[in-house]
Image (cartoon, rainbow, N blue to C red; front, side):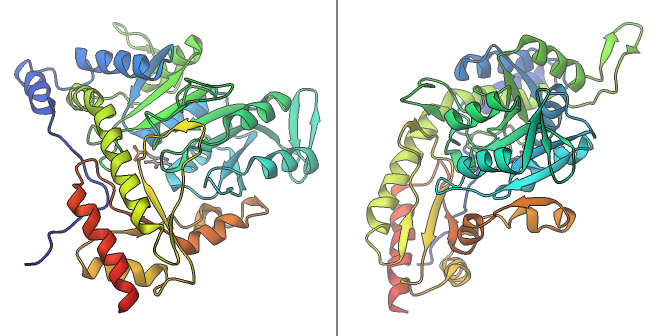
Length: 390
Ligand SMILES: *Cc1c(COP(=O)(O)O)cnc(C)c1O
């Protein structure tokens, strides 16, 4: 019997999604005005323990707004990681600023040693501003990404940000549910430690609204501005007066109806993903040349994506594994191409990109959906074992 297709990461909509969406349709509140939108904002803020949350159309628009409310403009530069999804960095260009690309460390998140070294050696801190020696421009923010549901080293990042007066934007699009279980930030969720954080509810994320996003912050003023900008910057709703250039970025009630039902199941999804992660790890780490990468040990991750590292001891290389798994009806994919290598960013400044190049060659993501059965996981493991004998 042929194996059914095992996708990489797909939605899991077996909770109250249909009930809430049906209610939205029956009451004819389908656009941005319905009560599910504000309820979803409140529930998300409660879940991650932030002062508030502002919904938006997707993670990308959330990052765009986050940069605007942090005051990033064409006069500024923003430090970003090179090993991530391009949607994390494009918004830097939307606001007219320039990115400076950093390497990753073994957590796949931004290398904080190189980050500090760059700020100290390649910049000058003067009058409360970090100035890039190469361009003479003001570096105003660091945009960090909590890759695959892991947590970037927020203790070090916040220290560096304090030292050089930098805003911190947390792209937590992949990491809703991840929090520190130890240390200075114990109990703090990914997205709630810097100035502003963003979640995504795209179809491949741990919870989904089809497409959608959320901006969180503990700064009420930033939240207020974010709400204003995502809703066309209307200063008077009756007379249509506008005091800024705003956007039509607010989430719809249909999306939010899905989101509330998904949020109700998030802890369950994390529990399943954790079990599957541990199962993969137990068997795969005993195959020569294959390792499932760890998450940081001072956090409770959301286990969104599993990173399989393949080295030369394995019978197949990265691309051969992907092809082979595909022939077995298992979807996998390489980690993202480095953003500093993408056409629009070829002229951008980079700083000592080394580890990211290596990880690019060796990392594959394997199926991790929250509805993946134990049997499916064992099937993928067996495929990887078998390929040794090809
Ligand atoms: C998914 C993702 C985004 C963008 O989120 P969308 O909701 O798809 O716009 C941004 N950054 C990273 C790291 C992502 O994985």
